[in-house]
Length: 234
Image (tube, rainbow, N blue to C red; front, side, top):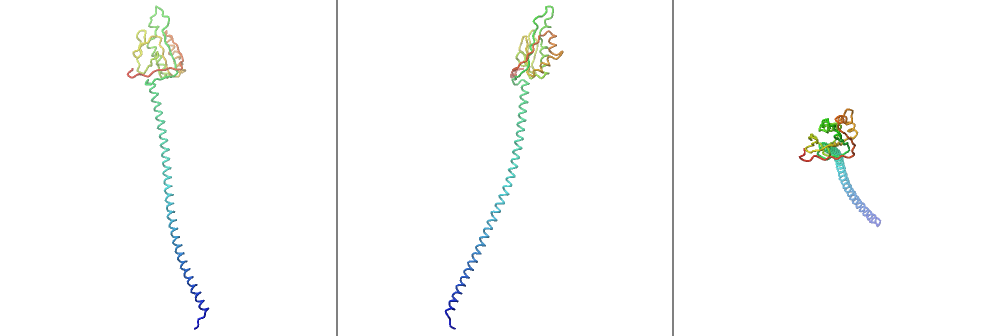
């Protein structure tokens, strides 16, 4: 059989075409395999990061929950602390007030001054003891002032305490061992109007003193200062 030139050329073209087709197929197969591998890797990365993100979101949710609980606990502690501070403050105020009343602390405030004097004129035929101030008169005034709510009381500047001893020795008055001569000024810290009205009730303290021939002077004082009881003092 005689081979013609056209047949050779056609054969060559077919061989080249076959080679190109095979090469292209091989390249395409490799590309597809590589693409599939890359896709798998990308999917694995996405899955990994998605898991990480879910874990982080869950952890953040837990942290937010713990933070909210901690804030509530702190708020509760602040409230309790505020209540404790208020309670402590109230207890301190009560303690201070009791110390003031008990004489453990000095005290000052407005109040009254009641001065008791022996009369200037004493009839010679009368008993002089009926015309001078006695300890019972002092006690009468002090008891009335305490009943009217006096916070503190003094006699001639000396503070009188709940265990003070007041006694009459002749023409003088003894207050916890200290002597005072007439006139006797009793000072009381408290509501001025209340103390005044209490003393001046009809047939009250002032009327009784006047009936015993005692001269009485009553004055409203803006500032009265009385000291604290010294250690070891009655």
